[in-house]
Amino acid sequence: MSEITTGKANLEIFGETLLEEGKKNSNLIVVTSDSRGSGKIVPFGKELPDQIIEVGIAEQNLVGVCSGLAAGGKIVFGVSPASFLTARSLEQIKNDVAYSDQPVTLVGISAGISYGQLGSTHHSLHDYAVLRTINNLTIVSPADNFEASEVIRRAVSFNKPLYIRYGKKPMINLHKKGSNFEIGKASIICEGNDITIIGTGETVQRAFLASRILKEDGVNAEVISMHTIKPFDEDALIKSIKKTNCLISVEEHSIYGGLGECCASLISQAGYNTKFKILGIPDEYMINGSQADVLDHYDMSPEKISDISKSLLNQ
Image (cartoon, rainbow, N blue to C red; front, side):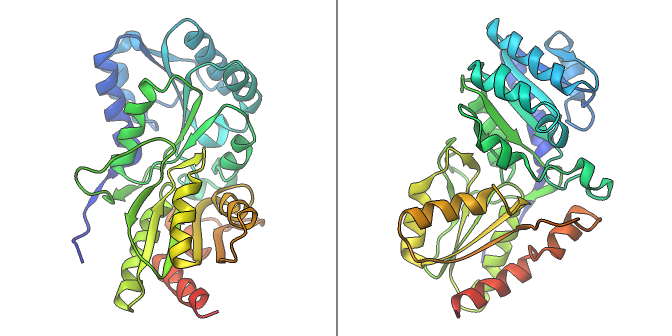
């Protein structure tokens, strides 16, 4: 098996790429809600002070300001913690951005359970679910540094409402040199014929590591990075489960309304009798701990994903 290398946190790549794009285009504006440090955009503010606007801890205002700037012809990135951006500002996202069809890129930082021991008030385990219901809003959750950078480059010219979700843990490099990235098209991380493991965002690396454990036991898993939750790449999933007829979804989100239920809706309505298991955060007062501790507790360690895969195959 090929050697595993670890890159930077996706948030760091976001900040670096945004600065590169901002230097190329003075029309690119960043709006932030007291999130320069956590959003890794301090260098952007220092080098391009005329291209950043600070609204303070006022997420609803942030979305409104972003919409207004976009209406005036600016390329706008709104940067704020995902937990607050997609809850406190939901009405503004729905009306000021999506309904008004303003080409704003909203960046939810420290997403999922990245805030770890700060607890449930700071977790965003709802964002896929609520944002999927809003018309005219694309949702992307990059899995590694390559996807984290490429989605920002695409966002500059995307010209549609877009939500991007970033965590803050260093990520394994999943993509090979020369890989392609397209919003709305899933990435096949590794091919296999026995079982499909699909993830989005930071859970993809856990799916990938699980596939390596399974490989040692003679099980060939296909790992999919479904980086775009909406629109969902139905063709990629159907093509995979036609080979494997066995599927596990892994997400740093509630089991309700996210990646797993996207998959369930698709395969049931398409008439496939596929063995299927959703891994995510259940409907309960969740444990407190680091991101790794929480994911491991809820059966999303590579070892547990591997075990569940083998059990599902034996059903």
